[in-house]
Length: 477
Picture 1: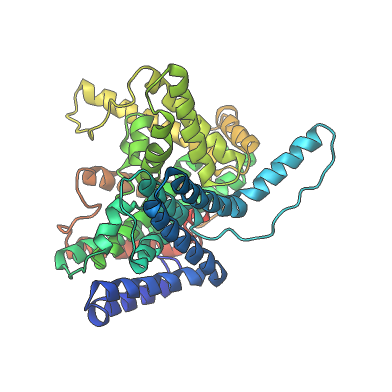
Picture 2: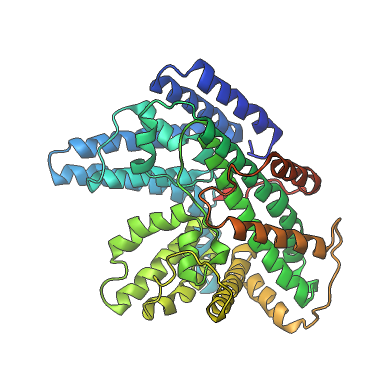
């Protein structure tokens, strides 16, 4: 059930009515209806994996309590590593087993030992990376005594399985969401109105920007050997906006609909394509994942402290693991490695914390320098996205080589319903809207008039329905 589907357009109002008008007497009844809705939502993908979600939820709930009640460190460590091991074991089995088995077989074949790997014919459970990380952060925080264990199973189950964030995040923390879940919510008209605006703006990002860009990006990447240099450049740009519109659009819809239920989720995107360097980009892109790896991997490894060797090691570890988290393919690892290479000079020159505050241009020499760095950062990101999108590392290098060697920068018509210049105009208008909104608390604030809201719907109907691409990219992760 996609957020941009007619089925969900029926599902969401029903849950909203039941939540506020039927099960609104107590906090427990509110949470219970959201759990039922969440389990139904998840079962629409594949009901068989619902048992895996319930098992993972119970595992972390129980081990969290056992860790807190343990009277000695040996017992605490046992329950802690049991939860970590089982969670990562399931994630590794479903998501990475075939990758490791195939890679090992290729290695053996490369040295003359012919072998055929045993591969699992299983579907990746949707959202497994996200709800696994919810549980991991909860157990880790209990082990290090940052939080207390949650004894109410209904409250904890909702924290793990809350349907707006269940299949593609943002990755929530127990320290943030559980306190909201543990109190009864009252309907707030202004909060609900802001949620509707944010949901619609996310829908525009997904249906109008991402899906339209996907049509061109797919055509170009699938036929890159026959494309000229300009088309290859545009293909990389289109994919950059496709993945941003797709994932940030999903996050806006998740945050927006959550406001309808009186719950505030963590912000996941903060206009990353206006970043002035790669370090700032990663503070603004997929914030919940970046901060998760920072707090639970990078800092425990030593972070930016210690010798230069350890600092460099930690940077490559966190970026390569981040790439591998996205999928079992060498292209994702290459994408993470390349971002580490981008980040390294900033770390070594101690400039990785230079651009903390958002930029406000005054249109002088300093502003021109800022614009240059924004464009440069975007170009570097687009190059990295080529590896993320390509089917193999070889394809990625050939794609980039084609940009340099094909040599023809004349316009090239693609055999689908729209021309490149229409899409470029659409992207320009989108960038302009994002630039004007970058200092606002909400992606689309309540000051937007009914006319502007109507324009969003017109854009969805006139542009979005033309595309056949409806799925969200991040559902595969």
